[in-house]
Length: 284
Length: 284
Image (tube, one colour):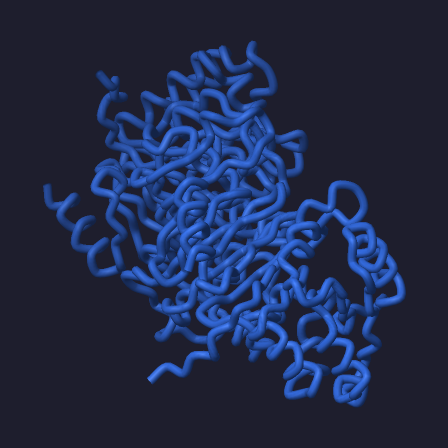
């Protein structure tokens, strides 16, 4: 039996990295607009980054410009700080929880099993937005990629994975996807287990994961879907480590702003279809 | 009515670049073994390259090692030399005609409409091997890519195409495919006309195009197939230049050495299926 996380009412926004932080703010504006009515405060978590002091002021300025009453730059550099009651309280006050880029393994290593992470999950469940860019996006699913060969990741073992932050199930998220040519990473993951959807997010693009598990693409870039569930054959189980993986039949979509994807029905949604489904969801 | 080139009896070998020229020679060995019985001479054409004097000795040494009785390094730097009767005669004597890498636009610009090119097509028709690596592979179809945005080529107009050398129809070939993350180039081409197969060849990998239009993958790398013929929808025709292209439903395969693809039946062939079909072809 598959164990599902409890139903959430909040939105998740995964961003491919390099989103505009200074001019139009197209993606960050959508993130902020999804905040629940009970809080317009924003918590920014730069734990993934080795240069938090450079990143935090950008996000503080951006969210302030968008109308946040307060932007909390959380100081979480180690597991002790991740257990800190003050940080938990700041999360509990925030309607938007935003993860910056950096190294997703730092995120999970520092936050995994912490009081802060439990508080973030609870905020998501009751309606807050959880958003992240780059490493902050990659870490969102139950399982994440944290390293992969740059040139040809379609070799057995070329992609390194571990447990993610567990905000969403049934998918793996990769960022900087078109710019760094990461198609082979999601192909290897899809061959290893075709049940899981591959979501590759380009720079200055993002996906909103609505509570009804509909993806909505935002921003000027692309979101690529690699759907392996009709995989016809692959040699991956028979190979030695490092040998090239063969793949017969994956399905490829490229979504642009306003287009969407129904994760469970495996259906591409053009703008009219997406809008109709999202309107239904709101009417319920 | 579609106009088809006359039936050919020779083999085409398209190589993704960076093939081994010094140790195992896996790919170049297969090229040489496909030479017809009437000639074991090799013609090497480095017209695409800006450094022919560096490339030609490598290929001369490799093909000599493989057993070529003579390796002709053709001196074709301009259209006058492409019309030269001595060069035509060397082509007519050769069982293998090999195109080096470089810039595919130099290849077509210098050879297009020339007596040399006509002689190569005639040699292919009667049984010679025509092989090429990198730019030499990209130039082989009726239509070729000669430039494309590196980061995100899935923008209207981001891929530049023109007529190729016309050795094979119904496909576009891209090289250095996994290493340079070129998936978006073939996706844009597929959206622009879903009839044409996208063949993306990785480094130190190649495809043999058999006379019966079966592809066979060779070498330690990958060959990626992007089949757009079931494209469900795309916005490409409605966009302004530079806007992001949406794509619903392309089919993706990754082939490894010994696997194949039936171009016209659109069928992936695992090793047993490929061998059965190739054995049939030889029995005829």
